[in-house]
Length: 119
Image (cartoon, rainbow, N blue to C red; front, side, top):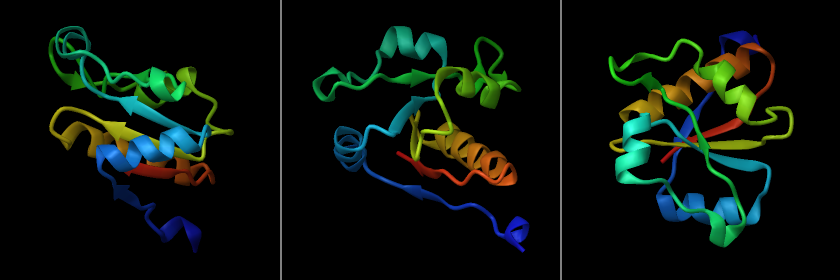
């Protein structure tokens, strides 16, 4: 009956995410904003905790059409077999929660439950 159980996406504050990222190196942060946002607004700086940020557009600039290759793009950036928790972030939270839900759903369908969190 596992297939009928929807995977859960929880919420965290940026401070909570920072604490987890600092302690657990199997956890990653994914910024799902668009390329222009990364360029003009900047990127989170994780160097103080020795971590790298993963950037994958949820919606592709300039049309803001859904990135149909989102999961494939994400998998190219990380080893999902070693990742235990993924934090997703964007400017307002709507793209990141949608990305988090989709990743949780697809990973669950593959039998790989990863702790997925929206910031």
